[in-house]
Length: 194
Image: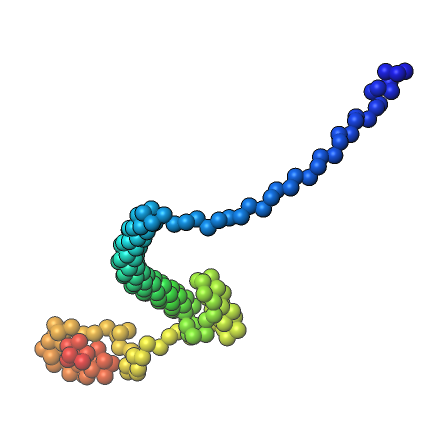
């Protein structure tokens, strides 16, 4: 049992350590060494001059680069502007082509269906045809278009025209009544040039 007590025993506490007092150290001002301070100031002046020279060199280089960068930016902007102008022209051309194609399709459907193109609605051929069919159903069958030929007089195409040899035969036989009848019927138009 004594063994158990030894295992559970607390370790001994060390004795307190007295505080350490450090006496204040006076910082005597270093006395400049006349020989070493001149060489140090000369070295310092040389170092400052060297860094100033580097600074000036880098300033000049930065200015040159800034000018080049500005010119590059201007060139890039000019190029971008030209590119944008070209893109705008391409877009305008594409929209003009689409408009012309739409008008062509509209005119084609209007001519095929006999409907004025202004009355058609839709953008595709199928929509335009559907619109034309609806208008035809509403109005009825469209009339044949008048191409502005005007009144051309009586139709003479149905009558058989006399030839010059038939005319000579009638004059040779002195059948003037037949010649007059042919004239009244309009069968002499080819011979007389009318």
